[in-house]
Image (tube, rainbow, N blue to C red):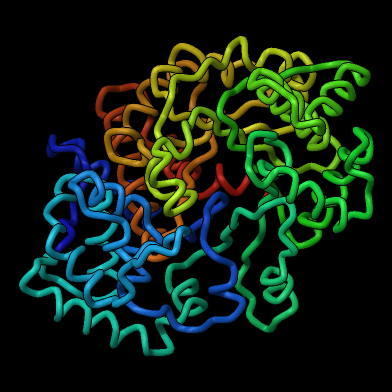
Length: 467
């Protein structure tokens, strides 16, 4: 057995018994996955996953960033290069390299997610080692050839009620159209991610802007035309089921410029002769513009600032985006968000979900903000803090100030499809353990804990994202 039945539950017997009882009421609830990065093409085309390496190693930056930290090249792990240098294409060799170094993941959330997937999805019960790596590979490869392991079948087996992908503003969403118009009834919805047409420092900014103009038939070289293009694309996303937008900016800076000031800034951006502060100011203005659009079209707004993207220039130039070298930075929220909050923070018809990679801000800034502004909710701990310790710290540092109902449950934020049920299992166990501790210390009534367990596992995410 790879997964202990009491994993992550409290060590104290009395509290563990309470947590066990809470867990039995929520562990089989449907999964709401409102923020993720799975490929909609998997479900539109419903063809088998290529091989175990493509399923578990190649798309998962949690896996290869750890291996890279030990000097293993991304090219050895099958990651495609942009500069035409050779990279490993044989899945057996990629898997062997992964298996030989599986010990590096001991004690990490990644090991827990992988072990869960190996046992619960593929029926493997012995730990992965260099000695049994061929058996593992062949066993998983055999399973992937069966109809019950096709993407749509796994979606249903995982009991996923809805899965949101993250899609560029200029995506034509053909796979989403195919799913919507097809016979399969699985609910896969897009999320509007406009970073490439909002961030002037993005190397695809001008190309993406041109494409957005073509898709919307708007003059994106004028400020009003540019805003109208966003509105048009948002409505198209909404037509295909989108309920949210997603904004990953370097900082949490917002602005609330007059129309004349905003138009002048936009013209400066279009010239290309702008400073880094000009770019940050423009991104900040666009967060406020996006919030105002959400007041009109009802899309939930997600903001996750503070990632120093592509920290290694060498890795970025050789392999591109999302290769494990995005690093957290400190983030200011109280003053940075004030212009936006002055404009829309007291709205009760708007939901802005804040995420952070800066845990020091939870008790000092984020929980107090979400604890008073109606428009704000706190997103769950994610990315580097999607872990037992991170989830527990989140509850301990935010609940006393903003409670549970100014948070939005859990999201898995993953490209690794088989890890979705594993991640939700971890979250449900951690939350049940935390609720059990509140009961055992007299801070929560037992009947309230059962209601909360349901809400944290299912209800809050469904409500917050209008699902």
